[in-house]
Amino acid sequence: MGMSLKLKKFLDNSHVAYNMVHHPYAEGAAQSAIAGHVPLAQMAKAIMLENVEGRSVMAVIPAADRIDMRRLSYLMHDELQLAPEHHLGIWFDDCDPGAIPALGDAYSVDTLVDDDLLEMADIYLESGDNRDLVHISGKDFRRLASHWMHGHFSQKPDPWSRVERM
Image (cartoon, rainbow, N blue to C red):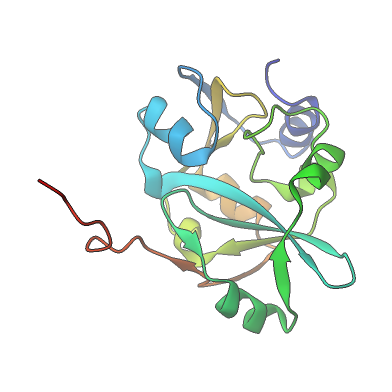
């Protein structure tokens, strides 16, 4: 499929320099980061959410993290839930399933970003297909995200949550 045309147009119109990182087929931000040999902390994962009235918002967090829905709802002053899977094809009609770019502005979607991503020197994100990532500088990412709401609403994985069995 290649890079999302909406994403490419958005990056070009925003004068953002980027390069592509090709990787073996993978679905989802964390799996794509692993396949592309990029740090999970620098991989931006997009999560689509809705409130009870159906208003949509994209939350962007590091790929290894989980979203803290309670903290995010508090930050937004609104109860949010994951958007139904079948809605994703409506917003991201030029993307493969599992390859949603973490730049909601390219799709006219309000976006929130976790503060941890704003501290990174480099950012990687899905390109809209399952074989390529987009690499941009942290400086450009912060510029693109300068009007987004931000805060700490992701949780790091618990290293003790997995029980090893012999």
